Amino acid sequence: MTKYYDVATTSTSRRTLIAPSAASPVDWPLLPWARGPLSATVLAALQRTPGTLGSTPPFAQLDPLTDNDFALALYLCYEVHFRSLVDPEWEWDLDLLRFRAGLERHFEERLRDEVGSVAPLFPFDVPTILDDLVREFPGRSLATYLAQEGTLDQFREFCVHRSAHQLRRSDPTDFANSDFLREDAPNTLEGPLTDDSAWGPFPMRSTLFAGTMVALGLDPSLGSYVDILPGVTLATVNFTSMLTLHRRWRAARAGNLVFGGPDSEESFAQLSDALALLGVGPQGRRYFDARLDGNARHRAQRREQWVVRLVRDEPRLARDVLFGVRATMLLEDRLSHHLLNAWARGTTSLVPWMNTGGEPNDDEGFRDSQGWSIRRSTE
Image (cartoon, rainbow, N blue to C red; front, side, top):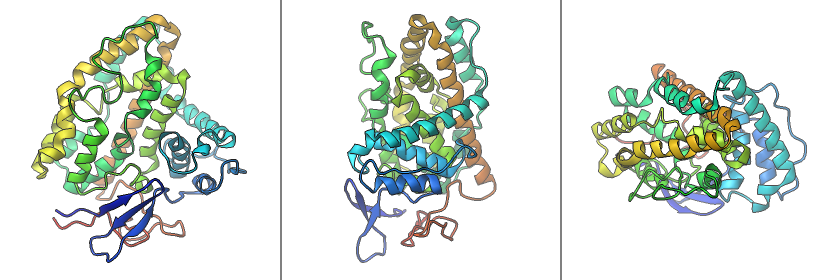
Protein backbone atom coordinates (compact mmCIF):
# COMPACT_ATOMS: atom_id res chain seq x y z
CA MET A 1 0.00 0.00 0.00
CA THR A 2 1.31 3.44 -0.89
CA LYS A 3 0.41 6.67 0.80
CA TYR A 4 -1.98 9.03 -0.92
CA TYR A 5 0.69 11.66 -0.55
CA ASP A 6 3.58 12.53 1.74
CA VAL A 7 3.84 15.52 4.03
CA ALA A 8 7.25 17.02 3.39
CA THR A 9 7.13 20.00 5.71
CA THR A 10 4.57 21.76 7.82
CA SER A 11 4.43 25.41 8.87
CA THR A 12 1.83 27.60 10.51
CA SER A 13 0.57 29.04 7.25
CA ARG A 14 1.47 26.69 4.41
CA ARG A 15 1.89 22.95 4.04
CA THR A 16 4.28 21.57 1.44
CA LEU A 17 3.26 18.24 -0.04
CA ILE A 18 5.00 16.00 -2.52
CA ALA A 19 2.86 14.03 -4.95
CA PRO A 20 4.11 10.48 -5.55
CA SER A 21 5.29 11.35 -9.06
CA ALA A 22 5.97 15.07 -8.58
CA ALA A 23 9.39 16.49 -9.41
CA SER A 24 9.08 19.33 -6.91
CA PRO A 25 6.98 20.09 -3.81
CA VAL A 26 3.82 22.17 -4.01
CA ASP A 27 2.62 24.65 -1.39
CA TRP A 28 -0.67 23.53 0.17
CA PRO A 29 -2.72 26.21 1.97
CA LEU A 30 -4.23 25.37 5.34
CA LEU A 31 -7.26 27.55 4.64
CA PRO A 32 -9.88 25.59 2.68
CA TRP A 33 -11.77 26.63 -0.42
CA ALA A 34 -15.01 28.52 0.14
CA ARG A 35 -18.29 26.62 -0.13
CA GLY A 36 -20.50 29.66 -0.74
CA PRO A 37 -20.93 33.33 0.21
CA LEU A 38 -20.76 32.81 4.00
CA SER A 39 -17.49 30.90 4.07
CA ALA A 40 -16.09 33.09 1.28
CA THR A 41 -16.71 36.17 3.42
CA VAL A 42 -14.90 34.65 6.42
CA LEU A 43 -12.00 33.30 4.36
CA ALA A 44 -11.47 36.60 2.59
CA ALA A 45 -11.50 38.48 5.91
CA LEU A 46 -9.09 36.08 7.62
CA GLN A 47 -6.52 36.79 4.93
CA ARG A 48 -6.71 40.52 5.69
CA THR A 49 -5.94 42.43 8.85
CA PRO A 50 -8.40 42.08 11.79
CA GLY A 51 -11.26 44.58 11.86
CA THR A 52 -12.05 44.23 8.17
CA LEU A 53 -14.86 41.67 8.16
CA GLY A 54 -17.33 44.10 6.62
CA SER A 55 -20.89 43.17 5.66
CA THR A 56 -21.94 39.52 5.81
CA PRO A 57 -24.48 37.56 3.74
CA PRO A 58 -27.82 36.43 5.22
CA PHE A 59 -28.12 32.85 6.42
CA ALA A 60 -31.60 32.51 7.95
CA GLN A 61 -32.75 30.22 5.13
CA LEU A 62 -29.82 27.79 5.44
CA ASP A 63 -29.99 24.54 7.40
CA PRO A 64 -27.08 24.78 9.87
CA LEU A 65 -27.08 21.00 10.42
CA THR A 66 -26.36 20.12 6.80
CA ASP A 67 -25.47 23.18 4.73
CA ASN A 68 -21.83 23.01 3.64
CA ASP A 69 -21.36 26.78 3.42
CA PHE A 70 -22.89 27.52 6.83
CA ALA A 71 -20.97 24.69 8.53
CA LEU A 72 -17.61 25.78 7.10
CA ALA A 73 -18.18 29.44 8.02
CA LEU A 74 -18.95 28.55 11.64
CA TYR A 75 -16.06 26.06 11.74
CA LEU A 76 -13.62 28.77 10.64
CA CYS A 77 -14.95 31.18 13.26
CA TYR A 78 -14.18 28.55 15.90
CA GLU A 79 -10.82 27.41 14.55
CA VAL A 80 -9.18 30.78 15.22
CA HIS A 81 -9.51 29.87 18.93
CA PHE A 82 -7.87 26.47 18.59
CA ARG A 83 -4.92 26.84 16.23
CA SER A 84 -2.82 29.41 14.41
CA LEU A 85 -4.37 29.78 11.00
CA VAL A 86 -4.11 33.53 10.50
CA ASP A 87 -3.36 36.74 12.40
CA PRO A 88 -4.03 35.83 16.07
CA GLU A 89 -5.87 39.12 16.60
CA TRP A 90 -8.80 37.61 14.70
CA GLU A 91 -9.57 35.42 17.72
CA TRP A 92 -11.15 38.34 19.60
CA ASP A 93 -12.18 40.51 16.67
CA LEU A 94 -15.52 42.00 17.73
CA ASP A 95 -17.14 41.89 14.29
CA LEU A 96 -16.16 38.25 13.78
CA LEU A 97 -17.45 37.38 17.25
CA ARG A 98 -20.77 39.09 16.53
CA PHE A 99 -21.05 37.24 13.24
CA ARG A 100 -20.23 33.95 14.99
CA ALA A 101 -22.86 34.65 17.65
CA GLY A 102 -25.51 35.01 14.96
CA LEU A 103 -24.47 31.71 13.37
CA GLU A 104 -24.54 30.07 16.79
CA ARG A 105 -28.06 31.26 17.55
CA HIS A 106 -29.30 29.83 14.26
CA PHE A 107 -27.42 26.56 14.94
CA GLU A 108 -28.83 26.27 18.48
CA GLU A 109 -32.40 27.06 17.39
CA ARG A 110 -32.24 24.37 14.72
CA LEU A 111 -30.92 21.82 17.21
CA ARG A 112 -33.66 22.65 19.70
CA ASP A 113 -36.28 22.24 16.97
CA GLU A 114 -34.97 18.75 16.27
CA VAL A 115 -34.28 17.67 19.85
CA GLY A 116 -37.57 18.90 21.32
CA SER A 117 -38.28 19.25 25.02
CA VAL A 118 -35.49 18.02 27.28
CA ALA A 119 -36.77 19.11 30.70
CA PRO A 120 -36.72 16.20 33.21
CA LEU A 121 -39.60 15.83 35.66
CA PHE A 122 -37.12 15.81 38.54
CA PRO A 123 -33.50 17.02 38.14
CA PHE A 124 -32.09 14.08 40.06
CA ASP A 125 -33.57 11.71 37.48
CA VAL A 126 -31.02 12.93 34.94
CA PRO A 127 -28.35 10.23 35.49
CA THR A 128 -30.95 7.47 35.02
CA ILE A 129 -32.44 9.20 31.97
CA LEU A 130 -28.95 9.61 30.52
CA ASP A 131 -28.23 5.90 30.97
CA ASP A 132 -31.52 5.01 29.26
CA LEU A 133 -30.82 7.34 26.33
CA VAL A 134 -27.38 5.89 25.73
CA ARG A 135 -28.68 2.33 25.98
CA GLU A 136 -31.52 3.01 23.52
CA PHE A 137 -29.42 5.04 21.05
CA PRO A 138 -30.92 4.19 17.63
CA GLY A 139 -27.92 5.18 15.55
CA ARG A 140 -26.98 2.91 12.70
CA SER A 141 -23.62 1.45 13.68
CA LEU A 142 -20.75 2.47 11.47
CA ALA A 143 -18.50 0.13 13.44
CA THR A 144 -20.72 -2.88 12.71
CA TYR A 145 -20.85 -2.04 9.00
CA LEU A 146 -17.09 -1.53 8.73
CA ALA A 147 -16.43 -4.75 10.63
CA GLN A 148 -18.78 -6.82 8.47
CA GLU A 149 -18.79 -5.19 5.03
CA GLY A 150 -16.45 -2.21 4.98
CA THR A 151 -13.70 -1.78 2.41
CA LEU A 152 -10.32 -0.18 2.95
CA ASP A 153 -11.42 2.97 1.10
CA GLN A 154 -14.53 3.22 3.28
CA PHE A 155 -12.46 2.90 6.45
CA ARG A 156 -10.25 5.69 5.13
CA GLU A 157 -13.31 7.85 4.55
CA PHE A 158 -14.52 7.11 8.08
CA CYS A 159 -11.17 8.29 9.49
CA VAL A 160 -11.18 11.40 7.31
CA HIS A 161 -14.59 12.32 8.78
CA ARG A 162 -13.32 11.78 12.33
CA SER A 163 -10.01 13.59 11.79
CA ALA A 164 -11.42 17.11 12.26
CA HIS A 165 -12.05 16.33 15.93
CA GLN A 166 -9.79 13.40 16.77
CA LEU A 167 -6.61 15.11 15.54
CA ARG A 168 -7.24 18.04 17.82
CA ARG A 169 -5.19 17.86 20.97
CA SER A 170 -6.98 18.07 24.31
CA ASP A 171 -7.16 21.87 24.36
CA PRO A 172 -10.90 22.17 23.50
CA THR A 173 -11.76 20.03 26.52
CA ASP A 174 -9.16 21.73 28.69
CA PHE A 175 -10.98 25.04 28.10
CA ALA A 176 -14.13 23.61 29.65
CA ASN A 177 -12.57 21.23 32.17
CA SER A 178 -12.37 23.66 35.07
CA ASP A 179 -16.08 24.42 34.77
CA PHE A 180 -17.26 20.85 35.27
CA LEU A 181 -16.13 20.60 38.87
CA ARG A 182 -16.63 23.05 41.69
CA GLU A 183 -13.41 24.71 42.76
CA ASP A 184 -13.77 23.29 46.27
CA ALA A 185 -14.52 19.74 45.09
CA PRO A 186 -11.67 17.22 45.06
CA ASN A 187 -10.88 15.56 41.74
CA THR A 188 -10.68 11.88 42.52
CA LEU A 189 -9.59 10.87 39.03
CA GLU A 190 -5.94 10.06 38.45
CA GLY A 191 -5.56 13.01 36.09
CA PRO A 192 -7.50 15.91 34.58
CA LEU A 193 -10.90 15.18 33.09
CA THR A 194 -10.38 15.64 29.37
CA ASP A 195 -11.06 13.79 26.15
CA ASP A 196 -7.68 12.16 26.75
CA SER A 197 -8.38 11.05 30.33
CA ALA A 198 -9.17 7.49 29.28
CA TRP A 199 -5.73 6.86 27.90
CA GLY A 200 -3.78 6.11 31.09
CA PRO A 201 -0.14 5.41 30.17
CA PHE A 202 -0.84 5.65 26.43
CA PRO A 203 -0.02 8.69 24.27
CA MET A 204 -2.81 11.20 23.89
CA ARG A 205 -5.78 10.52 21.66
CA SER A 206 -4.67 12.79 18.81
CA THR A 207 -1.25 11.14 18.58
CA LEU A 208 -2.71 7.65 18.37
CA PHE A 209 -5.34 8.65 15.84
CA ALA A 210 -2.60 10.23 13.74
CA GLY A 211 -0.89 6.83 13.80
CA THR A 212 -4.04 5.23 12.39
CA MET A 213 -4.19 7.90 9.67
CA VAL A 214 -0.56 7.23 8.68
CA ALA A 215 -1.14 3.47 8.64
CA LEU A 216 -4.01 4.05 6.20
CA GLY A 217 -1.90 6.27 3.97
CA LEU A 218 -3.64 9.48 5.02
CA ASP A 219 -2.26 12.88 5.98
CA PRO A 220 -2.24 13.14 9.81
CA SER A 221 -2.05 16.95 9.86
CA LEU A 222 -4.98 18.68 11.54
CA GLY A 223 -7.20 20.36 8.98
CA SER A 224 -5.85 18.54 5.92
CA TYR A 225 -9.27 17.24 4.90
CA VAL A 226 -11.58 20.11 5.88
CA ASP A 227 -12.03 20.83 2.17
CA ILE A 228 -13.87 17.54 1.65
CA LEU A 229 -15.82 17.24 4.91
CA PRO A 230 -19.58 17.73 4.39
CA GLY A 231 -21.70 20.01 6.53
CA VAL A 232 -23.14 17.06 8.46
CA THR A 233 -19.62 16.20 9.66
CA LEU A 234 -18.58 19.77 10.46
CA ALA A 235 -21.81 20.16 12.45
CA THR A 236 -20.56 17.55 14.95
CA VAL A 237 -17.29 19.47 15.34
CA ASN A 238 -19.08 22.82 15.58
CA PHE A 239 -21.36 21.54 18.32
CA THR A 240 -18.39 20.48 20.45
CA SER A 241 -16.68 23.82 19.83
CA MET A 242 -19.80 25.80 20.75
CA LEU A 243 -20.21 23.93 24.04
CA THR A 244 -16.51 24.28 24.83
CA LEU A 245 -16.18 28.02 24.26
CA HIS A 246 -19.18 29.07 26.37
CA ARG A 247 -19.27 28.57 30.11
CA ARG A 248 -23.06 28.61 30.04
CA TRP A 249 -22.92 25.34 28.08
CA ARG A 250 -20.73 23.51 30.61
CA ALA A 251 -23.54 21.10 31.58
CA ALA A 252 -24.35 20.35 27.94
CA ARG A 253 -20.65 19.70 27.34
CA ALA A 254 -20.69 17.24 30.24
CA GLY A 255 -23.60 15.40 28.62
CA ASN A 256 -21.83 15.52 25.26
CA LEU A 257 -18.71 13.91 26.75
CA VAL A 258 -20.49 11.30 28.84
CA PHE A 259 -22.54 10.11 25.87
CA GLY A 260 -20.75 7.06 24.50
CA GLY A 261 -23.02 5.71 21.75
CA PRO A 262 -20.61 5.76 18.79
CA ASP A 263 -17.58 5.32 21.06
CA SER A 264 -18.58 2.23 23.02
CA GLU A 265 -16.12 -0.51 23.90
CA GLU A 266 -17.89 -2.83 21.47
CA SER A 267 -17.40 -0.28 18.66
CA PHE A 268 -13.69 0.06 19.39
CA ALA A 269 -13.26 -3.72 19.36
CA GLN A 270 -15.14 -4.00 16.05
CA LEU A 271 -13.08 -1.23 14.43
CA SER A 272 -9.79 -2.74 15.61
CA ASP A 273 -10.82 -6.16 14.28
CA ALA A 274 -11.88 -4.59 10.98
CA LEU A 275 -8.48 -2.94 10.57
CA ALA A 276 -6.75 -6.23 11.31
CA LEU A 277 -8.79 -7.96 8.61
CA LEU A 278 -7.84 -5.18 6.19
CA GLY A 279 -4.16 -5.85 6.87
CA VAL A 280 -3.41 -2.91 9.19
CA GLY A 281 -0.80 -3.75 11.82
CA PRO A 282 -0.86 -3.21 15.60
CA GLN A 283 0.51 0.34 15.40
CA GLY A 284 -2.35 1.43 13.16
CA ARG A 285 -4.89 -0.21 15.49
CA ARG A 286 -3.46 1.18 18.71
CA TYR A 287 -5.90 4.10 18.84
CA PHE A 288 -8.85 1.72 19.14
CA ASP A 289 -7.07 -0.85 21.32
CA ALA A 290 -6.00 1.82 23.83
CA ARG A 291 -9.56 3.00 24.31
CA LEU A 292 -10.65 -0.51 25.21
CA ASP A 293 -8.35 -0.42 28.23
CA GLY A 294 -9.90 2.50 30.10
CA ASN A 295 -12.87 3.97 28.32
CA ALA A 296 -15.64 2.28 30.35
CA ARG A 297 -14.04 3.10 33.70
CA HIS A 298 -13.49 6.74 32.86
CA ARG A 299 -16.95 7.15 31.38
CA ALA A 300 -18.42 5.94 34.69
CA GLN A 301 -16.20 8.42 36.54
CA ARG A 302 -17.27 11.20 34.23
CA ARG A 303 -20.91 10.35 34.86
CA GLU A 304 -20.45 10.52 38.62
CA GLN A 305 -18.16 13.52 38.82
CA TRP A 306 -19.66 15.65 36.07
CA VAL A 307 -23.31 14.78 35.67
CA VAL A 308 -24.25 13.69 39.19
CA ARG A 309 -22.30 16.48 40.87
CA LEU A 310 -23.49 19.18 38.48
CA VAL A 311 -27.14 18.26 38.92
CA ARG A 312 -26.76 17.95 42.68
CA ASP A 313 -25.07 21.35 43.04
CA GLU A 314 -27.02 23.18 40.33
CA PRO A 315 -30.35 21.44 39.61
CA ARG A 316 -31.26 24.08 37.01
CA LEU A 317 -28.54 22.63 34.75
CA ALA A 318 -30.32 19.27 34.43
CA ARG A 319 -32.03 20.18 31.18
CA ASP A 320 -28.72 21.33 29.68
CA VAL A 321 -27.12 17.95 30.42
CA LEU A 322 -29.93 16.19 28.56
CA PHE A 323 -29.77 18.70 25.70
CA GLY A 324 -26.06 17.94 25.32
CA VAL A 325 -26.74 14.20 25.16
CA ARG A 326 -29.72 14.36 22.82
CA ALA A 327 -28.15 16.87 20.44
CA THR A 328 -24.99 14.76 20.25
CA MET A 329 -27.10 11.66 19.52
CA LEU A 330 -28.96 13.53 16.80
CA LEU A 331 -25.80 14.77 15.08
CA GLU A 332 -24.04 11.41 15.32
CA ASP A 333 -27.07 9.59 13.95
CA ARG A 334 -27.29 12.01 11.02
CA LEU A 335 -23.59 11.49 10.28
CA SER A 336 -23.94 7.70 10.42
CA HIS A 337 -26.90 7.81 8.02
CA HIS A 338 -24.94 10.06 5.66
CA LEU A 339 -21.97 7.68 5.44
CA LEU A 340 -23.97 4.46 5.25
CA ASN A 341 -26.44 5.82 2.68
CA ALA A 342 -23.59 7.06 0.46
CA TRP A 343 -21.81 3.72 0.64
CA ALA A 344 -25.06 1.87 -0.10
CA ARG A 345 -25.33 3.93 -3.29
CA GLY A 346 -21.73 3.12 -4.18
CA THR A 347 -20.62 6.75 -3.89
CA THR A 348 -18.27 8.67 -1.63
CA SER A 349 -19.51 10.27 1.58
CA LEU A 350 -17.10 13.19 1.14
CA VAL A 351 -17.65 16.39 -0.84
CA PRO A 352 -15.74 17.33 -4.00
CA TRP A 353 -12.42 19.09 -3.96
CA MET A 354 -12.89 22.64 -5.20
CA ASN A 355 -10.91 24.12 -8.05
CA THR A 356 -9.57 27.67 -8.14
CA GLY A 357 -12.94 28.91 -9.38
CA GLY A 358 -14.76 27.41 -6.41
CA GLU A 359 -16.37 24.70 -8.55
CA PRO A 360 -16.15 20.94 -7.87
CA ASN A 361 -13.59 19.01 -9.87
CA ASP A 362 -14.47 15.86 -11.75
CA ASP A 363 -13.03 12.36 -11.19
CA GLU A 364 -15.47 11.35 -8.45
CA GLY A 365 -14.83 14.62 -6.61
CA PHE A 366 -11.51 13.50 -5.20
CA ARG A 367 -8.94 15.57 -7.10
CA ASP A 368 -7.59 18.85 -5.85
CA SER A 369 -6.57 21.83 -7.97
CA GLN A 370 -3.15 20.22 -8.62
CA GLY A 371 -4.75 17.07 -9.94
CA TRP A 372 -3.93 14.87 -6.94
CA SER A 373 -6.40 12.29 -5.71
CA ILE A 374 -6.77 11.10 -2.14
CA ARG A 375 -7.62 7.72 -3.66
CA ARG A 376 -4.09 7.43 -5.08
CA SER A 377 -3.34 3.89 -3.99
CA THR A 378 -1.83 0.71 -5.42
CA GLU A 379 -3.41 -2.06 -3.36
